[in-house]
Image (tube, rainbow, N blue to C red; front, top):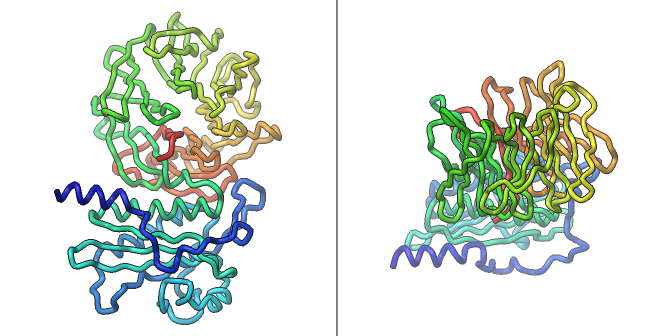
Length: 443
């Protein structure tokens, strides 16, 4: 009965009405940020200290987690500048957390654009109830308001993620960053296994445990499965992991080398194998048998990736002597060269919207992430090291990029944007982390 009650409470999380906080905000009055256009601006955000419903109520440890999670989440957004308490005119604490309680004038004079408030109360049965609100200071309007019932500590982080997702949706029109999942390769004790976590480093989960080398994770577009390659002692295998039952399937393919699998949006898996002694790119049928060769050349052809429409495929080929990035039009079958600078360009990924191609280029200072715009035919370097920056992977919003870098002395996963904003470390736990792969499906 207790477990059932917890499930019922968790189902309604985020759906509690806040008294006096649900008046609709007119669309023309709401704040908007164009994170995709040039000259992206920053908004000044102040996160006010959480307020108890009863001043005599002792502060629970969960409120510290609430503050830390809010600040951490907002820190991943390059268009948000977090203000310190000293930047705000007047007292640090608020008189209340609703619009009627707030002196917006002092925040406006402090050049605050957004104000986040939170309140909490502990019920007699021990259940924690929190309310989160975000206000546009100049218009004195509530952008987001949500209440959550917390029965387990892990639900608190999930509640903050949901609130941040809605706030980002309100500001930018997109919210997948807070609702998506990353897969990556973690190295521990000489082995490489596949793990997953959120882009903020929450919910780490180990997918494989072969105590060998698992490489190149890739997601099916609906998020129902994940593929990777297993480098065994005497052969390579294709591994398919089901998100539904968490079972692993082993698939044997001809040849000695099985690398860089990638799902097409129609569900087919593409992969590079050396069926006849030279790595070429093949498509597989629904039972993961070879369907047909898609790219064949005397050189090495590897690393296919697709945009959401399924009409374009990027890949790496050594057909010109050195590895370069190419684009295959799957309708016309025409191949277009993308990279011209440098002699070593690898690890391509095409954004879900089909406009941008990110890849790693070897420069005199090390590997750097390059973003090529298919509309303008211009490229820009979006990372600057130090060390090597490799393995770029687009987020579902075609804005964020995850990549691997050894700038700290060992490989970790970092977050960048297609505009070259300051990078952020994604905490993935102990051990080196490489080969990030963003799940296209959001929850």
